[in-house]
Image 1 (cartoon, rainbow, N blue to C red):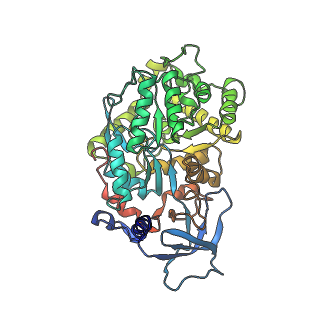
Image 2 (tube, rainbow, N blue to C red):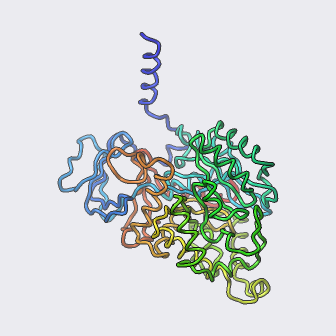
Image 3 (cartoon, one colour):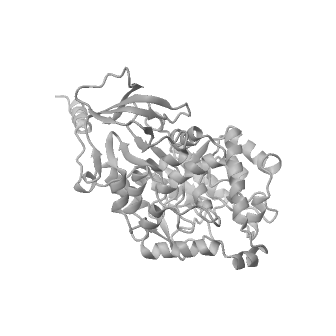
Length: 480
């Protein structure tokens, strides 16, 4: 046999072979059949189109084979049939700011290598972009283990270590020396297997420009949580995406100097008073849209600092260790401490409240202007945003911001898939795509809170038990 043909046939045989599932993964598998029929189910396909009632979705060998009316569907004889009246299927969520680490205090973050992959999958997040990495080698190994069927978790786009300049507050970050160091860092981590990068607070324009050019040369994208560089300047340098939205853009402050992150104690007060519909913010939105720069929404990490919000669900507190729960609740009390607010801002009303509403207004305006809005969660801040649960809350908050439920679901599915270059494989429910689906009790198309009622999460046609995954990490977030 010709050597090249033999190699090709061997490769095909390997790719067609069933994946070996470890005992760790097998305990969470609820549905595992080559052909599956989800019958009499409501379908929200992720495109923004209206929900389709009483549908049958056929999954075959890990892909979506067909979607059609239950009345006329041809269900294969060998299919495992799952009756889903009063249920909805949506595409697997695509989390675009979904770290694998959690704040541990004193500017140090701990890798939640055990609990976070499980929670993401349990909540219906079947694909994540890590949105900045503290332990990129760990993230890459987690991805390998998940892809090999050795542990539960989502599909992963691993972001390299933060591209940070001199002056960082986080002890675990490398401070770039110059533009050449930025290029070396980008190329090294691309060789190691990451496919995205995130610039951070103190990076200089020269360093960011060099990093973007190096990444783009090799087909990778760069996002940024910026402070030393304003959004419009970052857009002019070629950045692909900007994290968090208005509440981190410093270009509107007179104190801002080139390549410096300004110290503005009353920044939240100022953000809360900004005009979104005209003037500098409106001009910034127009500029980003024209340059095709995306914005990643992370509303949950802001909401958790608003006094009185959100109502803390038991599932979040139950997932935390005793120490992490205690620290988070203490942080919540501190956020609403009127004496503290009076000392810092001269008022007992937290400026976070108005700033949070302004961020919502900004994101709606950006999207309505034609901008690409992505959905994330950012499980950092004061510790109340957890993997997966935060992604669900993000979709709910987008609806509160003024998007329809169908628009919010599209933002959290197809928009992310399209940005990642994966829209031909994931992001919508359509024949030929990967069978990455979330089965929820109820109808999130009319009541967005039903997105939390996840029962089964399909990833490549294998159905995982959401409740078992969540129970497996009870009391562990904050330690592992």
